[in-house]
Amino acid sequence: MIYSMKTRHGVAIVLARIPSFTSSRAAILIKALAGGSETELRRVIHAA
Image 1: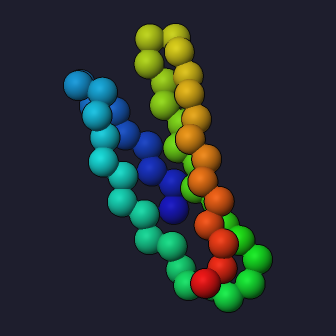
Image 2 (image 1 turned 135 degrees about the horizontal axis):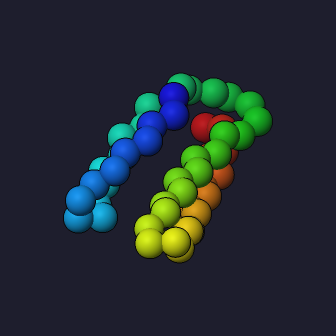
């Protein structure tokens, strides 16, 4: 699922549900935009 949110104070809590998997990998990408600036956080999730 893809979520988009705006907050007045610049703080957001994002909950994610990742299905179980036993091969390959997944990634989470969070992108923040504020006042013309942009940053990204990427995290790779490996199979259990």
